[in-house]
Each structure stands twice: as C-alpha cells, then as structure tokens.
Length: 162
Image (cartoon, rainbow, N blue to C red; front, side, top):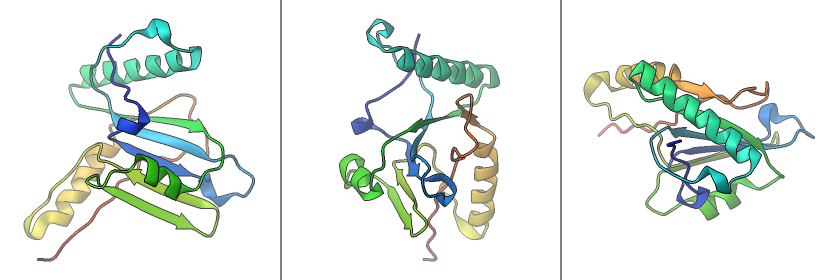
C-alpha cells in the first residue's frame, strides 16, 4: 500500500483542534486535512486503528486517481483537552504559515501549513479565490463514519491591497 502519512512533527497540512459547536463537556477533536500522495511504508508494524486510517487514505488515493484530480483527506480523532497554542508551539515552525483562533465558547482552531494554495492577482483576485475554494471544497473526502460534530474543511485567506 502506498500512502503518505508523516509524523505530526513533520506535518505539512492543516490541523483543526477544538470543541465543536462550543458545547461544554464535549470531547475535543483533532482533524487533519492533507493532500493524499504516494509514499511507501511497512504496514506490519502498525496498530489496527492505524491500519484502518491507512485504508481510508488508500481509498482517498484511489478516488484521486479515478478522478484524475488531487483529493484532500479529512481525518478526525478524539483527543484529550489541550490548549491550541500548545499545539501551535510544538508543531508550528517559524517559516510555516499558521492561523490561530481561540473563542470564549470553549472552541479553538489552529491551522498549520498549507494543504493547497491559491495566489490570485489583479482586480479579480477575490473571484479567483472564491472559485478556488469552490473547486477544492468538492475535493474533500471525510473519514467514515464522520461524526456530526466533526469539523468540515476550511480555507484561511489573507489579502493585501498594495
């Protein structure tokens, strides 16, 4: 099976960590969004949960091949409560794009790295960004079963007027 599954310390994608919908008492989750690419590894040294994750990523890879278009895999795991800034301080790198948001409703978000990027220019740059997001929104594949509270794919943008 050929898949790319890097250690989180080497992660180049997008992490979403938070308490979905701001509900107090719900377990926080971590969602990983990444492009699915080929890479070899030894499945004999993994846990059943990891093998299931690899099967999902293999499914995503097959979908990308069949569609002749890259896909973005979305995998959500329950985690113990953790401050989002801790995740950013451990996984973020000085030269890596990142985004951080923490709300008073017990919900937070950390974006690290870039899964896909768009560089619009000129007076149509916002329309280009909108088209880019609509195109890629259709390329997300969510792990099954997807929990109702699991986050959906997000895009983070910045713009300059120079």
